[in-house]
Image (cartoon, rainbow, N blue to C red; front, top):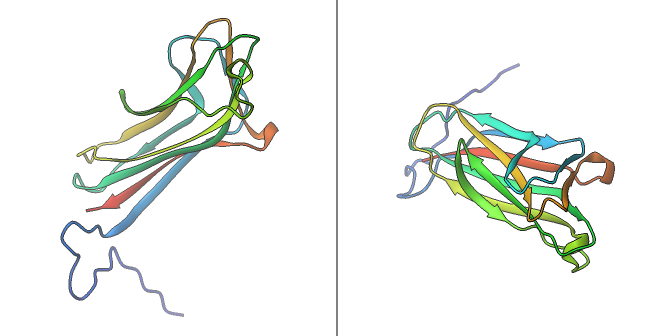
Amino acid sequence: MSQLKVNSIIPTAGVPTGGGGGIVQIVSASQTSNFSTSSTSFVDVTEATLNITPTSSSSKIYVTMQGGRFGMFSGASYTSEVQVLRDSTVILSTQPSSRDGNPGNQNGSAAIAKLDSPNTTSQITYKVQAKSSSSSGSVNVVGTQSGAILTITAMEVSA
């Protein structure tokens, strides 16, 4: 049996100007248990953190966060907010959409993506954080019990 192993495949005409060479590596992490906070400051969603070490400083990192259920369970119009950080820098932020249109009973999912340019070959940490607009409302990131797992993924894209 034969095996063919390569580090990269480049077309015979070369890589086009501004074109990338492809996906080098993919790393993901998922929130598989329920998480809740009533903090009005951003806190880490415990299982939604990953580390990736780019192979080249010219590589880009395509970061996505999707799924999950960001629920606000209260009787008033409180909202939740979610963000993704590279180390300590916020690179993405959103308010999850509400399924029923009532912010006081918000139970929506979020999907955000960004092509990040970290310019390093050192390990990078990407993580998801969430907060409530009021300490009277709890943000509940629902995991596998609702079948809506929150996943963060980082893909290294070669330059």
